[in-house]
Length: 403
Ligand SMILES: [Zn+2]
View 1 (tube, rainbow, N blue to C red):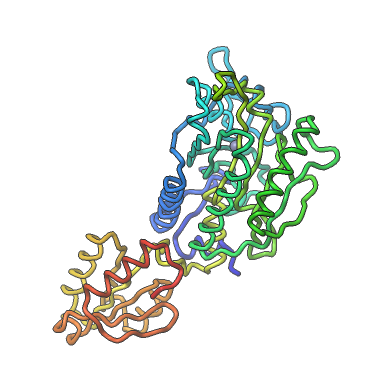
View 2 (view 1 turned 180 degrees about the vertical axis):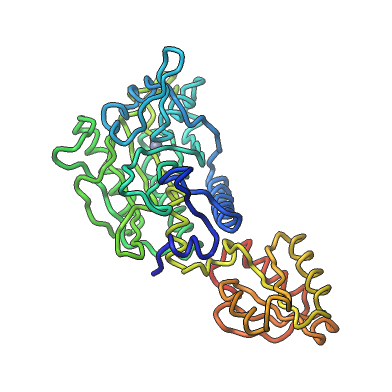
C-alpha cells in the first residue's frame, strides 16, 4: 500500500500549511472531487435507507457537553472553551448532543420511530501536534454521522441495517476491512457506570453480528464512554489498524437528555440511541481510499474519469467536443492535447484515469471511440454514444469494475 500523504501531494489532492496550522488540511480541486463524490454517495445511500439529513452548528455551550457526559469523560480530547459574554462555548467533540436536543425539540410518537437523523458535520479534536499527519490525524474532522432513535425492540434490526449499509459502502469503495471488533469497556477507563445497561447493549450488538454471520473479535478498553460499539477496522499502508466505520448502542445519552416518546399506551417511554457511521470521518476515509488504490480510484470517485487524447492538432476540436458532451452527462473528462507531448507520454500521464480514448482521423470520421481501460485492456472501437452511456452506467452504479 501507498503513503497517502506523499500521494496526496503528488496528485494534488490535499495539503497542509504551517500558517493555517498542523492537523488542518485543505482540499485541492481534485481532492475535493473525491471527497464530494464520497459525500454524495453516502447521502444517497442514507436517503435510500430511510435517513433524514439535518444540519447543526459546530459549537455548543459547555453545559451541553456537561449534560452529555463529554465534559466529564472526554475533556482531554476537546479544545478549551471560548469565553463569550459570560458563557463558555465549545467546539464540539461529537454530533450526538445536538441530535439528542433536536429529537426532544418536539413531542415524539412511537409512530415516528425508528427516527433516523443523519448529518455530515464538522467536529474537533485537540490532538497533540506530535501525532498530526496527513488526513488520518487531524484537528478538524468532517464526520459522516447518524443517530437512530428507536424502541428497544427495534435496536437489533437497526444495527443490522447499519452493518449492511457499511458493507455496501465498502464494496463500492473497493475497501476490504481487516476485521470487525466488538469494543468493550476496560479497566481504568472513563466510562459511564451502569453495568446492567452495558450488558444489555452488548447483547444487542452481538445479536446483530450473529444474525448477519459476521465474525468478530472482542476489543477490551475500546468502547465509547457511553456504551459498547462494533468497529469496522482497516489497516493502513504502514500496517497500523484504525476504525473506519462504527455502530454503537447507547442508553446513557437518552437518559441524560431526558428523551422520550409517547407509546401506543399513551405513556412516556425512553428511546434508545443507535450511533452509526458508514464511512467514519471523510478525512480518514479518503486517506484510506488513496492508500488502498494508490490514486487509481474506482471510476465514480476518480477526479478525471475519461482522458481524451487527440492524436494530433487536427483532432483537437473533436476532443473538446467530446469533453463538452461528457460534462453534459456529468462525466469528468480532460483533454490531453498533443502540446503535452507524445502519445506515449500522455498515456503515461493519464495512467490513473480509468478510461482513456485516443482520437485519430478514423475515430473522428466514424464517430467511434476506441477505449483503453486503466487495467491495460483495449476495447474495439464502438459508437461514442454507446461508450459514454456504458461509462455513465458504471459510474452511477458506483461499480468497482471498469467495464
Ligand atoms: Zn453519536
